[in-house]
Amino acid sequence: MIVIKFGGSVLYDLHPSTIEDIHQISLNEKMVLVHGGGNEVTNIATKLGKEQRFIVSPGGIRSRYTDKETAEIYTMVMSGKINKIIVRMLIQAGIRAVGISGIDDNILKAIRKTKLTVLNEKGRKMIIEGGYTGKISSVETTLLNTLMDEGYLPVISPIALSENYEFLNVDGDRAAAYIAGNLKADKVIFLTNVNGLYLDDKLVKNLTSSQARECLPKIGFGMEKKILASTEALSLGAKEVIISSGRVSNPITSAISHKDCTVISN
Image 1: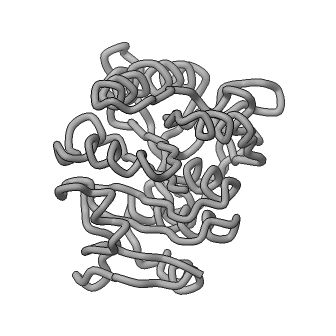
Image 2: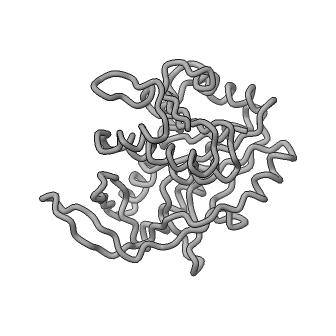
């Protein structure tokens, strides 16, 4: 069983062979896709006149600040436009895809963050209102297993429900990690615009989970979330995480064969 996380580049940067590659692998493997799409959320929000704000945690994690209006736009773009474009592409290739969000059947429950500790422009810590972001607290896998058992490929947008049934923005990489861990996935594949984790300008081909955690302070924006999510997926029960490029021919097959990528395992 494989969980694949696409970045927001799914609509623009993935290799043309990607969808057919997924089709071929799905004939023999159960799969779940989790997608991002932050750039498209920013584009739509800007068109609607809603300026987007980004914050950095003391640990160096960069994320979108989500107030109530942004949460509504995020839900609309992720679960509407992006999710359905991906489903259309998959169906066009002959895949029985079903587009859902993390709120369907309580797949993703999250605790709303009431306060956030962030770094200001001078690098000093400050506390701000939490907005509508959440930390995933539980994953319900019944619907996903039912769909896969019937031959469908679930495509999930990373929206969670709070304890008070509010829509919450949760990070797509970490949503994929929690879903993969709870499904006890054999492989979790993060498709990106690079081959994997680079340290000192060299591709890191293999890491243990503990080595990955030790690397976190040295990693820049973007990749640090994938490394963090990788360690979470492994700690929750996934067997192997692969960070690889979506710009190569047959990127899923390439990742599974460990070609020019970063493999993290326990």
